[in-house]
Length: 223
View (cartoon, rainbow, N blue to C red):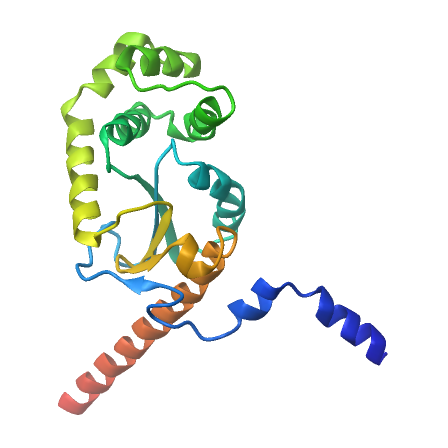
């Protein structure tokens, strides 16, 4: 019995044991000096992935992140925001927001990653992106219109402002509750990023519950 128990313990990965430890600010995550509103739904805990299609680490994060997102509870809202740290980054961010506007982002997202990292495509020119999008039920004309449209430019400006306020200089990053920043270096690995984010989600739940309890107590004291 004891031997079986010890074998079971040995089977637990180091990351599992680490994830159970309390998080430390400045080590496991950082706090943005300028929290940003990445979601307008304040009833849920927002998690936003900041990424770049051309980033190999972002590409490698896709599988563990998608598996984690699929199991998120109803009180958590997950979004993606493309980084805008350079000319090519902006072109790929433009593709992301155009696909979103065209209603094909869910179909395109993984394939866009694959096209860059598996097929060696660049997909930086509007015509090439429009041609790529035409494989997903939209015309090249509609794709080009979206790529050059005001709506996409507005989304790009919003993303750039968020990047400046968060003071992010690298990707991938997970932003929890508009302020807690998880990076591969702070989490210890790409695979551990969702685990740290999940612990932060629990922390935010506790913070919000404590705030609600304090508000209710204040109201009771005033009656």
